[in-house]
Image 1 (tube, rainbow, N blue to C red):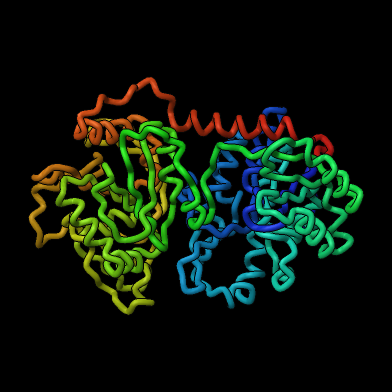
Image 2: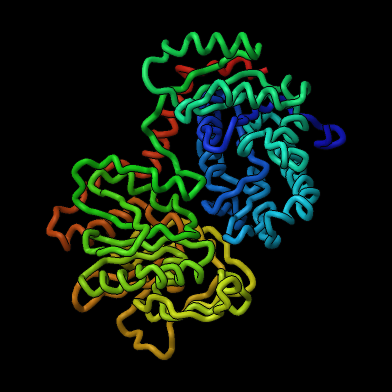
Length: 509
């Protein structure tokens, strides 16, 4: 143990490893966090290294993966970047932004990452563990691995699976997704590739996403236990409740539950989309149908259109132009369409994007200044340093409401001096957080830097009611349950299902 000279964890950590990416590690950690919270323990989530553009900003302005923030909510605690000390944010062309303890430290290629960042990465992981344990001596860490722990070409430089498991002496469970098929091969293959001292850390196996009668897998369970000498601690049935995916590719697989939508929402699926958890609150709105837009088309089928955040704004703006989507969006606006941009989406709605320091994808395309879609008279200049902070403000439009959220962006946006700006107005009392304008022919064009804007129930209701009025629909019932209450309910349901089908007691030693 290297935690501190005179310190070691009082409660054995639990680590969730997977036979592959997408096996269900993140949801398993979330469920265990809520189960232990309900048992009166003090769980804290931890993932040494995560790769995701779906981020959260903690109260100190530090970036972390949204999945660890969600796990912190399951624990009933405030998210902090120490729970995810290394965040890699992919930005295309085999490069990623490296974030340590919430702060951007540089850009790396995949080839150079393990050579240049392995040692400082391991140091920042140990620093985070020291911080957590020194302030929470009675906690139990619930640790999430990444991908597979036996990627043999990378295992000597693995920062977030077996290295952490051995370092902490964690009780590990191996999660596998039976929905993918080949579950026996996944389990046996993973265990066979572990060293003897590593295999000893595996205290149980969890079968995830089983469809049908659980009793039908009883023989399979016995075979696994006889072959591996490791108990199958649970078989988790297929669950309908959905959580934010970590990979933007998974967005295309998400289907709306709404059977009779009154309003159709189109969200542009940008190649470098970020913070797509911004749109999870829409799944709490039974009247909304969400569809992801991936190619040029007539957008008039939608009642409102959203341009999401982007990790590479200039690159994504060039994508919109190349595919014809930029023209489609303009045509939609001219046909009484309602458009809302968030962060990079706001920037793209403007007239000019300037990238003097090659921060937003212009270096790849050799264009440091390009035109935006041109629907709002706004100019954005990308500077060297990123803005990351939590936000509390009050909206002016569509109505007055208290708003919470956070900013993550590299750019300063201002009204363009050469344009007529008399018809553009601030959305918030803090006038630099967003703008809107009403088209003469009908519809609105608006955008904000606030991620999580739609998590604010009153503000979301006012915006949706704006759309409903234009369709002569009755206003929303204000008695509907809040998004955050819905999120808590989903976490509770997840934990209840795990409690029914997962024997966690053997891990609590």
